Image (cartoon, rainbow, N blue to C red):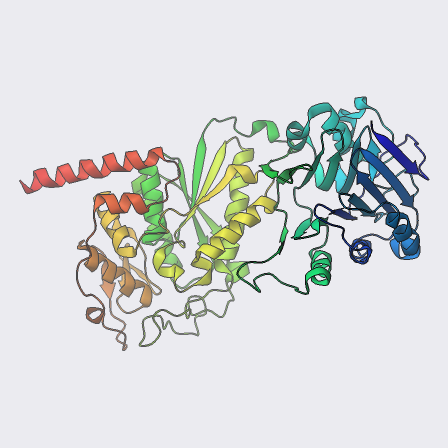
Length: 559
């Protein structure tokens, strides 16, 4: 039997109002009883997000009691804690709520305050739900003047899996189903943190700082990593995920979702029935070979070149254009001179000499351009989503900056940078699940790229791995002394591959390449194929066949 007591609550059906910036709290006495001082601390933390009303619900088994106040928590603090004390015991579960009312919404009365109780379900929600979705699930019945009720109605109508794919809006929510003995919590891009403390139980809260305050009171520690093993943890619930927690066993499962996208061109997404690759193309070997390989594997490829006012722009643009023409790839130039053209970088500022190859300057960040790869990533992500609105089903982003050599020197070439940018895509794009970054040559050395490119017929003579290149008589000419050229020349020598490029000397004292090259590196087909991070697994087999054909051709020629 379900026993419900709702105190001071009027059921008034009316128009929808949201809770876009509220504080929500969940405390579960799974193993013991959290002190009321901890509850107080968590509710005060929630109040920092909302001062326009307070609500709490206590769940004991299938018994639910709800109490709401139109004042902020600080004003009714003693009353709330006294009310809780009579109901708070081992096994109890608390849902707390502090409302923030935007100018567009109803004033706080008990009918718009949470927690919401409906048919054995209890909910707290931070965010806003679209009017479209509110109307879609309205046939379930309306009891409240708040759009958060649509989450309850959607759960009743569709179940949690389908609800999460259909719901429109911003959300961080906690829903307890007393009938099934389960709790669900999830977020798309709203904040929600959690903690477990051994001997007490589980906490969810809108504010990470408030969670740490509670953990510190119970454990004396304000961070993890104090010991190799610990009796507590604190983390943030990831975006675009929801969790299903069994209140009997404590076992929980994570689910990922995308959510419904509202856009005038949403019906066109995927209409072409094909995918596309955008390559951030500098004219160098890393990016050029990436596009060249993917084109040979059957992808539609477009090379995207950025003009940011760099000294080598004329040669770089020519290199990208020639690579596109010879490889049957698309090509476009994005003008970023208004963003990076005045950077005090030796690659941009004509008043600063290029020093990348000078003694002591190798393996340094002397060629840094302020936020360059960060800007490139943002532009590529936008271009990728624009391609989706045009009808592509998926777009892959590939860049030459993710390779083993530069990753050891520049932070924006590193795996950490790539992981961070992948996470940014989840919140910077509506169609984030259809845009994927591929670290194609992340595990390859430059020598291995030379080996691979030579066997795929890549036009090295139309590349621009140089910090001060020239264009003479329609050909690209690279300086011999800069760091980029030196690394590239060493790589070709180590790979045992002929270098068809043209060079000039600047006549300054630089490192001698002979001091760096020890000998050829043992490279074979198997090692290359194992180390490449392919877009799809079937690409591995295709490359094996391409390289096998080349080996057969070379052997026949030698015979």
